[in-house]
Length: 108
Image (cartoon, rainbow, N blue to C red; front, side, top):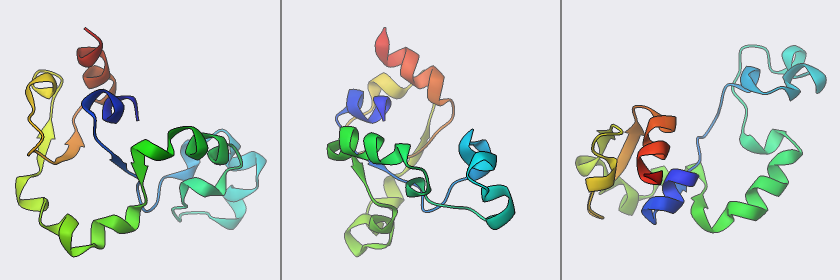
């Protein structure tokens, strides 16, 4: 989200994520109910605070299926920390090769 804010862009949330990466995974029993499946960000109660705080910088995953969004795909690129500060607004970012590196590059 910090990278999106720094670039004046929106972050498209993932349709699913690896819930095993969350500290709440076992505490909420997701290791039993979602074993091997992805889940959405809103499976966690703390997501409410996150979404409320950053909602103006994010859009739901379903936007990726919209025809207007599909027009951006030919211009998508993988972005590295070396080139993140030099992007123009016509480039849709498909993937950051190093999220933390890109964030640090924007802070300098």
